[in-house]
Length: 322
View (tube, helix red, strand yellow):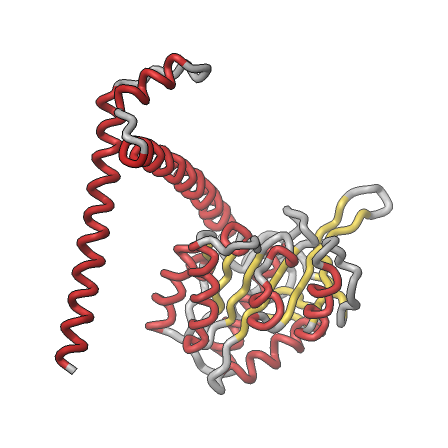
């Protein structure tokens, strides 16, 4: 095990820290050093950290340590004064794209950690708009020369393109039980590009993490290189924001359904209100409220149509000018 980031974290920086810096597995450090050496030659890298489908096993902590070492090496090896604090960690898809573009304009070579990446990248037969936006960003952000770290429980949930080609390696985090039956975090297996491809193709159907051999395994220890309290607060804020977003989606769907019934099938808001009260739902709602829903959706659709028409006319004018 190597000691890293000694200048950033002198002895006593955190409770019970007896030496400067923190420990990092030698083989893991070697792999990161290869990326660090090459990134300044106009490369970028995406690393996936999973947990065999489980949660609360330490994957976020390992991502923090890797991001800290990467940033430290940018300062000491390449003299690149990159950002490194809690702002390097995002937990929502919209924040990933916004923060990535913001950091990319001011400083290349940063580490950007997308924690809880499963919220947008869990693979389905048809990609959601959000998933498509994130995959588009990951495909196009290479010009920023970042180390992108995607943290999620399930590697096999990733879209095929990210799992097989966009990412350079996979680190799968796990835990074990000691002789007293107490769970101990801090273990991982490393899969190279070739190894993770074999794992994904052979193991995806049954979520089998033994479907391919890992390149090496190692350990990491508890050490938070950023403000742990602020990070945990940020996680709570993201969870609450996600809940609000889900509520807003349900509200939007309700508005659209009422609009659909009123316009497509000519069911009046008054009849809708009477029917949902008389049927088994027994929900009492004023027709005026439903009428407002219909009106709002109509206004939004009209605004969208006007914008589309304006864009088409603008493009047509530009073509004629050519």
